[in-house]
Length: 492
Image (cartoon, rainbow, N blue to C red; front, side, top):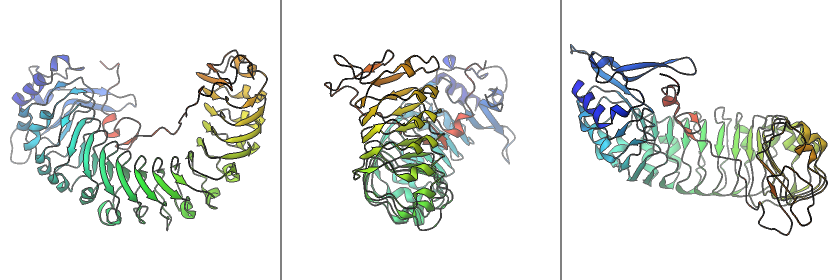
């Protein structure tokens, strides 16, 4: 084992590692590790993180090799196979650990249960022998350069509870993943997987699923009627595919689902009346589909919603719905390009937890209500490309958290002094119709000045519904079961 670890050290340019972890020192190789204190105060061990003496053996054998974000380069050598009792190989966030050969030495690691190689620059196809590593419960290959179809043997890994293949160039049908019946977390987003979501995937396959992210693939067909039947599901993200037809009814109360992303498909009809059976839903995104209104009469009951995005659907002309007033827990509301008409109602000022309000590209008229100034937590306010009149309300002086303010392509007049002369407001983007030769509004601090004669000025969509990355239970970018292994940057 010491020889295998020494080869591993040199093959991955150990002299350039971020932390040396006592490798190659004149101590037992089971002492080649360092302990770190994370920012949360917990201790983590990097290097040879655990050795144990198996039954029938006299010596300690390496069980865990843990080196996330440690500057490893080159390839994992085939000699890794000599660590035949290895259960955890955790090497994510080593971007220069590249090449398909890095997987070759894993073929003999039949005790391996946790394999984390996300963000490592791996190339080529997932090898056939992976299907022989039947002890695997967690596999993270996300954010690499893997391509092609998965080997059929891979779908024999029925002990898998967590599988992350996201952000690669993998292909193949979605159906075989239904054989992985113990999955709790499945992340396939940003690949080229195809086919339909059939009812048996949810009735016989993913019956234990908690987080399911199939977004940005080429899946198609209608959504199965039992899509919401798995009561353990908390996250369902299927945006960026080619699904058609209606959103299925939610026939019984579902306590756990809190994140539902359906945007950028070809779904039609209406939000189902039974949407209120998702009793703890916090995030709903139906934007960029072919949906219709009216909204469900049960929407006022959806008081747990914190993020709601309905933009870019071919709705009929309609005013801002009154049910919005009941959603006082909203943090982000985007009704971009929803064919909204009439005035902005004063009750918007009651949504005091809002951080983002996007009413861009509608036909709203009348003055901006003073009550919007009560939204003191808003950092992004987009009222541009409407028919608003009057002046910027004096109450905007209360909005000290503003970072992006878009008011262009309206009929507003007066000055922007309420913003520009307020030292507590520091905008990174502020756009009004202050362009020459005939400015409609006077603005001394705008980042961009538009004019009616310039149809291209700020004529693009600012999308606020950035895709949260549900990778390994962690929202945004990193895997939670790896994240706690990352030592602070200033740890010696």
